[in-house]
Figure (cartoon, one colour):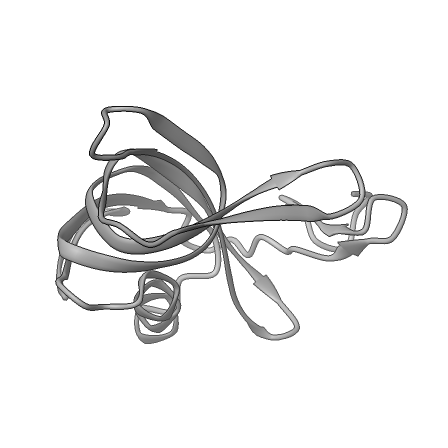
Length: 145
């Protein structure tokens, strides 16, 4: 991975074969990122799993052929004392069809470029909201979700 920053903005390049969530979690730990928005991402995934939330659970779809990442965005927060990365993706397959949703896992193919905007001095939380059965972003931990 390559990473450069100017102020609160980081540009990351992940390389072929890297596990996306592992790389982003490692980045957040190394750079002590406790609150961030992943503004965009482009590149390719060798394989990925996207999910659709049906109101009770995620319905996963595994993509086993490479797909181009035409849109990737999300957030980095803290949950249970660790970085929590939440991403959504739009992916184009070899037939030029798009598939997307909640990104559950992904392995970089060739490269992945990401812009991460951090919020220094802040910590975003991601507590479990039992009524939905989901971890939801909390911009002001300790307040109401």
